[in-house]
Length: 398
Ligand SMILES: *Cc1c(COP(=O)(O)O)cnc(C)c1O
Image 1: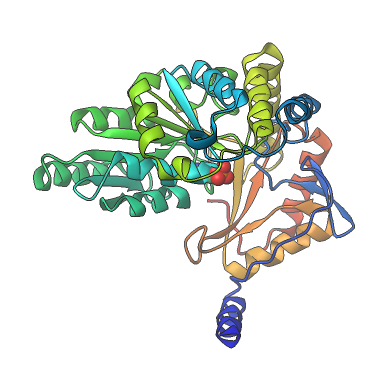
Image 2: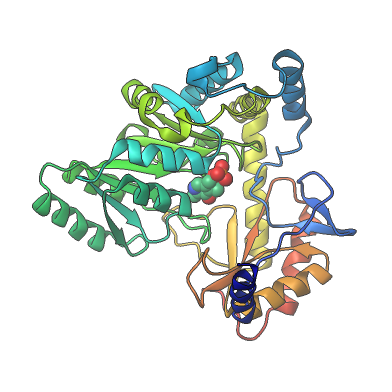
């Protein structure tokens, strides 16, 4: 048995696709310590620097003092503790929806929600670059799956025509992201909404990398484009810009009540610790405040600084369409070259992960650089300078 795994691991190494965990002995933040080395951290999704914020720490500590650590059981079994109820009310208010439901992770939100919405008679249509959690949720639902090339609405339209022709009574669910996690570009939401309306489809929008970053008070792309009502299912995570852990779905009262009754990852899993809910609630309240909005605008200053200092970075800004996010890439292509470049950056004091198959397609390896509001201007300038110097000839910004 173990020999079998050894062989498979050896095959991964031969393809430069082997992955290893790296121990960090510090809190997440703009600097982390990895095996004794201090590194400027351009790898995390803690876009607003909240993961180690005193406000969130205090909210969690106060909730631990009052509610303890564990939640005891699933929320349907041992009761829903108040921090979860308060967090869901705050999320719904912030997102501008009737109701909200939280899950133990964004992954759990996806794999619990999609199969609750569609079944084997139905159709799910996904963008090719959708996150693994959305793909897994779609597969688990048993619905017919159709994938359209990234942001290619001609192909989406033909899938919708196929669905309406072949399965006239089916429920059709379109699944996409507002900011794509490994490419950093956005979905043209207005065009998507036009299509979903024409074909009476449902739309699930995963705002994992948009909340806290895009839209007034970080409400996300749907809010920024004034399309909150047009999106049937708003998904997001509490683990990225909100700095904590957990996932959420926002939508109508009936959707949320349905999920409480049908989402298996919600029903058959112990509730997250109440302290996480209290910390996430502090994050939502911060985002809704003037100070939170200032932090978000500071993040955009830092994003613009990196783009000025290193313009070759992708995705390119296509004006006048507003686009961009806190996620940037340096396209490398070759898996080994991307790992080598990441290592050279680490020697110089920067933590910038190489992203490889199966997270992205084979031969599409890249460095993924995330900017946060907590980075100093000097850190960003130094990174840009190191990228200029170390970028191998093969690396081209797309
Ligand atoms: C990170 C991520 C998730 C999963 O969220 P977790 O809270 O980390 O489980 C879902 N969708 C997208 C697009 C993500 O980037």
